[in-house]
Image 1 (cartoon, helix red, strand yellow):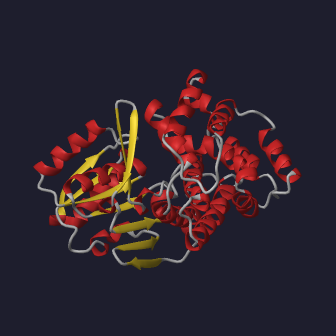
Image 2 (cartoon, helix red, strand yellow):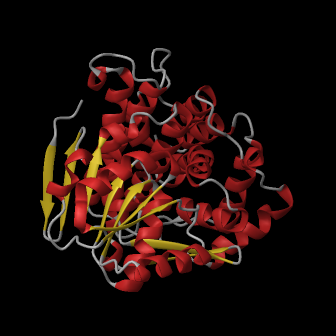
Image 3 (cartoon, rainbow, N blue to C red):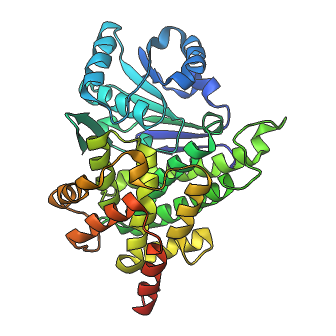
Length: 379
């Protein structure tokens, strides 16, 4: 388990450890007053305790946050925010709760903080996203980047194993795209590489037979789940960090289009696409592919990621998520029209091919991609 630490940047403080959230009143600076708490049903009871700890600094608690941040939900939350006289916002939850908090912070220009309960990484980025009429719009605004982030491993280690793996794949996608972003730097690539190492260690551990997802040891900080969760949460922090400093590309744009069109579960969509996008890197960005190979100790990392997903109950095809084959070409065209920010160039047909492979999970694709890359001297 990673030792507790505090990391401070110019305008942001990150606290990492276990059972930190029970000291929230000491970790939030004075500018966090009139706090509008946002959480999910799963954490409603512990957040009630947080509200009591905050005392007069607490303005209101909203329980519930929909995927992809629908604009109708934003309007409802804004009304409550204004009616309660809130002056800051703090999310305890995954990407949906943090996303809603970002929308409030952007519209009201108030301080924002977060205690993530998944590995989505949104808490580290200036990226916001909202959905209206089946289309997801994203943008960047430093106002929405949380000023205080509390990484409490205890908040993530009770996630079911399928949810943990899917969320870790989401974070892996952040780090993967940071490696091949046009604006990648040696610093961002070093951080992304460390993130991939931490996250890959976690997903392998999550897939081990003795990792049950239930904390039963008297010393819960030393169970397989707690150890894997610590690796995953540190990896998610680093992956979110580099996602916030580089531009998103093929993988994330596909996920945003799919999410906005079909209202698909965010982490599971990332999990389905990750092995297929990584497979394209064997030829287009072999260094990225090799980074995953090194972290997973295998020559076929894309195939292994799919095997881990299947073994832990994570969906492996878009078909399982409800995507119809008739829409694949139009979805690919929408991505190509939106432009790309990769270091490498890819043909428009690549997006369509990735979607088709992710829809049906064609057998042998990853091995064939690897073989072609080797024959051309990439690996």
